[in-house]
Length: 191
Image (cartoon, rainbow, N blue to C red; front, top):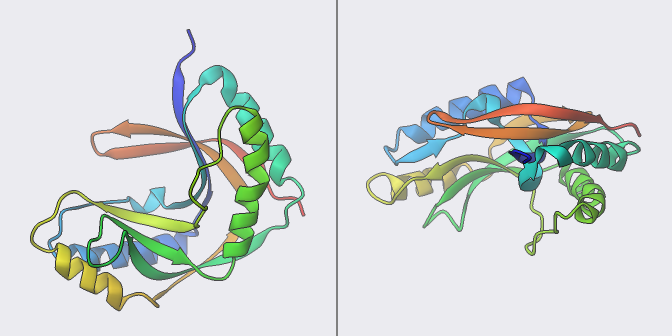
């Protein structure tokens, strides 16, 4: 019987962006809201979440992603502006937006969707919206309203830029202190 690996496809952020996000998270922590913050080393823009994948299919997933992005041109994207889902009055997920380069990230998503669909991974019903998740609110209570206000105050914040030269197929192992990500394959952009 095959084991399953929790898997997703993403692009990483630069170390400068990770450092700046860590500073922003420290500022947001000051609100006292109960949030599970993303560890800076785990920051990424998800292109496609695949869920639990049989180990026997991982190689096919990696090959599909590599072939899909092989002729895409490398690019740069900017991380700009804080926001929340569903909104800053009722934040459940804290995210950072993608400014310049969002079209290229969307294009990468559109490249990998068809070959992954052929492998049995359906396209999500909702429209793909590139973003960087930085935290998930654990529960309401003191600090959440203040966090929402602080997020709104940072809606135009310039976080920094990242050069993208590859898409990465990651495994995600959930643990007590949060997830641990491991690159299963690096798919270079060849354009």
